[in-house]
Length: 125
Image (tube, rainbow, N blue to C red; front, side):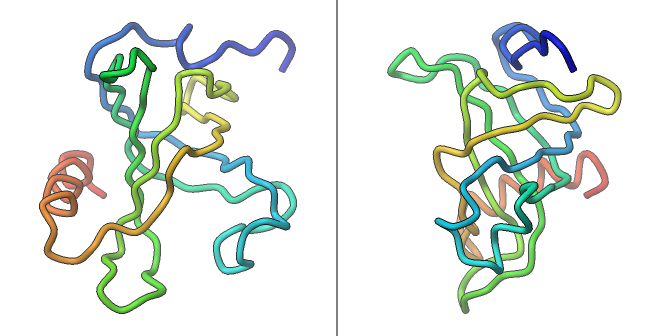
C-alpha cells in the first residue's frame, strides 16, 4: 500500500476503542517460537484502546487480545502497548502493523484483567 498512513493520522487524540487486527512486527529470532508466529509476523484479533498522550507526552494505544496462557498464574488475556506511529494496513476492517513496547499475559484475578475483560466483552470477545 503506497503512502500508508500511521495510526496517528487515522484517529484524533482521546479515548477510542476499535476492533482491530494487529500484525506483530517483531524480529522472529528474538522471540520464543510459541509467541512469534512465522517470519511474516503473528496476527492477533482484539480490541485497541487509544489513550491519547501519556504523562511523558507519548501517544499510546493499548491492545487486548486472547491467547492461551503459557505459565501458571497467567490469564488468557494479553496486553500490549504501542505508539501511534503504527502503520495502518487496512481501514475496513482496521488492520495495523505494530512493534509493541510491552506485550505480556495479564495475571489471573488482577485489576488489569478485570478491566480487560470488560473491554473485550463490550465487543463480544
